Length: 314
Image (cartoon, rainbow, N blue to C red; front, top):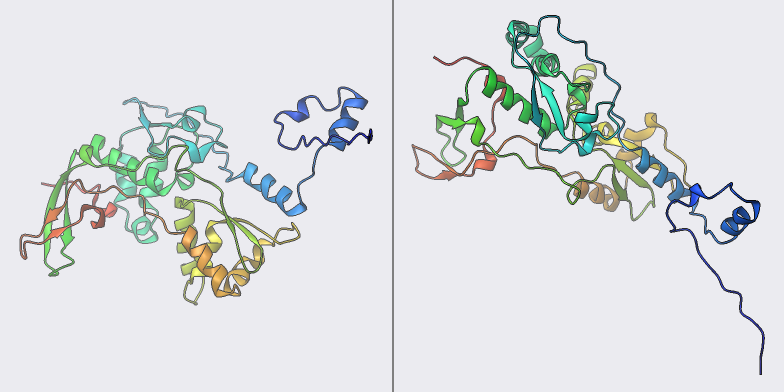
């Protein structure tokens, strides 16, 4: 009879809060080190970067000297999930404090220089946000939701705008109530940032952020600063949080565009499958019927012109 005892192997890698007991006793530390499988260098690096995620920039708002109208507490469609690194606890919880438009914001929204540079609505919204967050760090969906809210509380719940029928090309005016527009909400089940993309051919891993206003502005700046056309690699560049090599090293940010431009087709196609996203703008409730050809236009395909949001209508 073989009385030889087999060594019992224990893997403590998946035990949570292990760091809390490390350092309390040398024997315990030795036991943990012996029975913990270390992650490969690449996985360790990816885990660290995912844990860090998107960093919301520190932003202090100064209180208004004359607060004639109090700010309202508004619930965000994102429920605050993309802002967990924000200093403002209300924003992290999915709420933002916002003032209605004042004379200063209306002046900004009517200034040709700001309109032509594409920063008028960003500047105006930033002025109206009381919470400690920069409008540039807002997700695209939250940004447009707050613009619609500003229009509703500052001017009118009614909004008229032009639609061009995709079937016959006829242009016509359509009226909506802003309070009836629907925005997709984020929750734990459909929120994922950073977005991890493992490339099958090169074995690199790319971490992408979700679209934010800063993303859109960076693309605009690139278009203004270069004589070359902006390509897919440039769009991916502004959404990239990190690129990790098979050995666990980070690709320098200065090499990201070159990296994307040199990807084989299979890897390139894999990334594109992860970067398809809704533009975050509100959807028209129901379908709109063209008065000329009588065909219906899907509400989700109607583009709301935010430049016209803050025009007063007679």
